[in-house]
Each structure stands twice: as C-alpha cells, then as structure tokens.
Length: 99
Length: 413
Image 1 (cartoon, rainbow over the protein chains, first blue to last red):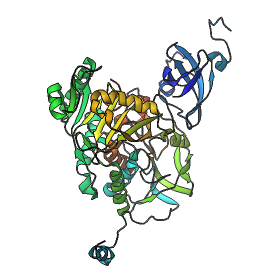
Image 2 (image 1 turned 135 degrees about the vertical axis):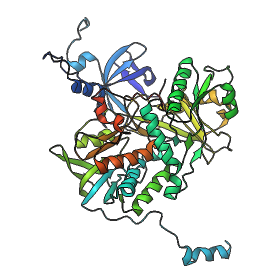
Image 3 (image 1 turned 45 degrees about the vertical axis):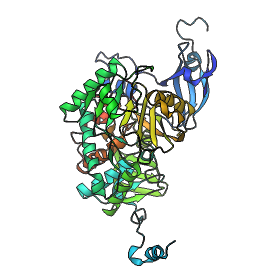
Image 4 (image 1 turned 90 degrees about the horizontal axis):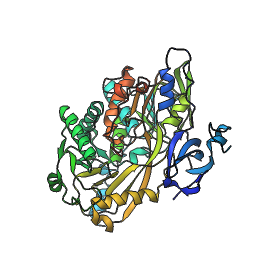
C-alpha cells in the first residue's frame, strides 16, 4: 500500500486520497466584453501536459475533505513532497485566519 | 526421435521459412513514416500499401514489434457502444475482424463467444436498454435479457440474491469475440512487409522537427529521417510524442492492469463484464481466465503491478464466480492507457500540417485495430478525414462536441 503525506493529516493510505489533476491556472477573466475565448477555455479544461516525470497535482484527502498540492514522479511512481495551497501559491488563502 | 522425422526435417523441400521478410536498412527518406509498431501503426501501414498503393513507408518502433499495449490488452472485440458515432465505428472494425484471418493468412483464433454486460442496478438496466436500442437501430445485434436467459448462457454465474449486488439483467451482444492479439499484429506486419513496407525495431523517435507549422523531419536514435507525412500511433506515450511535435492532447496516461489465472478446463463460453463491479472475465483458448477491472486511481507512466488491483478485482470476481476462490492468479501486468475525458479516441489531423494522430485509445484500442488502421490510411492518403472519423478529431474539444462514450469498458455508469 502506498502512503501519501497529507499536510493536514500526516502520512495516510493512498486509498484515502483522490487525484484532482494538474495544477494549472485558468485563463484571465474576459475584460473585452466579447465573451470568453472558447479555444483558451477548452485548452484549460480538456488539454493536459500529462508529463512523464515530476508533476504538481491537486490531491484531496477524502475523509477530511482537505485539498492540497503534491509533487510526484509519474515515471517511478513516487510521491516527493506535499504542499498546502498557501505554501504553493506563496500567500494566505482568503479568509484563512491561521496564517 | 524416429529417423523418418529427422530425415523429413533435413529435406530441402521443407526448409524453414522466415515468418517476416528480412529487415531492410533504415533509409534517409520515406513518403510516410509511422511512429509506433503496435497493432494500429502496422494496420495503417498495411492498408496504406494495399488500398492506396503507398509502399514507401517505414514503421519505427522503439522496442520490439507489438510489445506495448497490443501485447497487454484483454483481446475483447465488440461493437455494442452507446453513441451512434462509436457504435458505427466499432461495427466496421468487427466486420473487418471477421474476414481478417483469411485475408492475412494467419490464424487469429477469432472466437465469437457472446458478450454479457451485467446490470446490478436500475440505472444500469436503463443504460443497457438505451444501448440495446441504439445498437438495434444501427443494425447491431444487441438486446437486454433477464436472469433466466443469463442462466442459460452462463450457468456458472452466481445469480442468487445472496450477494451484495444481485444481477438484475444483462446487455447481450452475440457477436462479442476474443482473438489472439499478437497474431493480429504479426499478420498486419507480415502483410505490410510483403507489400514493401519497412519495419524498423529498436528505432526510437527522439525529436520532431516542425517548420512554419509543417512537419519537416524526424530525429531518431539511428539518425535523421525525412518524411512526407507522419502518423503517431503510440498509445500510452501519446502526450510525450505529441509534445515533441509541439502540441498537447486531452489525455491522461493511466495504467490499466489485468491478470490471468492458471489454465482450467474450458467452462466459460461468453465474455462476462460488470460495469458496476468494475470486473470482466473471459476464458482464452489456452484455458486461462483473462481478467481485468477499472483503470488505476491516478496517472502514471510506470507499468508496475499492484496488490491493490488484484485484491479489489478478486473481491468482485468472487461475487460473480465464488468457486474461483480456489484458482490461482498466474500472471499480472499493466499497460498505459490514453484516457480521454469523453472515453473516445483522438484521430485525424493535428495543428502540425502533414502530421497525423491516432491516440486516446484508453481501454478500447485492440477492438479498433483494423478500422483505425484502414481509416487512418485513408486520411493520410487523401489528406481528408473520412466521415466515420470526423466525430473523433482533436478539434472536437474546441467545438465542445465531445462523444460521451459511456459504453466504454472500465467505465462506471
């Protein structure tokens, strides 16, 4: 059984987690008034980097509903590091009084 | 050894024959280069030569012939898909499969067993009825049957309601078949080589040169190769190769595991699938039970096997066939599946001119081998995407016209 390190709950069984996909930033909001750029959004929603190597992904510890970011190697199937969102994005999340 | 047999063996009249013609040296330029020597790439090479007279073709394979997902699938052939686009596509493949052994002169051990998709919930019954009606409308032999009929077709199944998910009915598809996967690839390879196609094993594409949006050439571990047109047919590594050409695909590479039991006396005729239990099983000509389930829980390029998979699969398998508790698992393996968000393949044109893609084969690639080869050959030869493939173009994601194929294997309903 694989063990994943959750920033909130510590090391837990991999079966307690789901993978939420690559960390990617959404296209900027439409400010032109012409409506969203469909190609850009389709790119964001459907297309994947799908790297063979080290990737950064959203992961969720299902039992506690806690989302975080994990770095892992898709070639060797090893989990390298886990980050809280605050660590990853380098700032406190809005409404997070703990920081 | 009887002397007569020895003499027979040494007589010139019966000298051993090569199965494949001798390999030619790699040349610096071809009309068409196909990246990937698996079933799809070899089929495309064969049809390019047979149907379109294009024989200046090289198939480049980084490992051994058909050593990727062609060797790892569970060989099920069927056409009872849910979307009209999907059902018509796979139906053409099934038609091609039926006459393929004769055409290639290879015994594919094509064996029509009948295919049962079990339904354990009202929702699954509804989907089965929906699939049956779509199939019948398109002339595909498919119907919803009840437990009595299931018991007649497969008396070994536990049809009692003493289980967690009792069987309520099944989608029955009589043409469902299994075949020898390696033989399909070998047959296409030999057929293509006899028509003049070159196959180069241990030849890995390491770079793709694109100039002004057009394909310019390929870098390989054996030097530069110029090509008029290139097809990538490398399911499992599709994103990695596409990135060399400078574009992304709507694909996550996720392992799909399978296993076989020790050989048992033939007892299981139909192919049994349960979408709700994520389990499928068929008995091969060797007597081994070929079993698989759902894809792994997260993307990965490693073909390692896990105990989680076997345990999870067997928990469900023993609910269907409790007596299998005494059988041993003999081999287990994984293939890397190209999973697309709509469970349909990605075929046709790419953002790079003269560069074509045959990818996104998730859990449905082996059954599509003949049709994808034939129709991709048509696409490459004419430069036009045939009507049958149009719904599966990469561009569908930008038009927001996905082909939601809920009839795909290893997909919950």
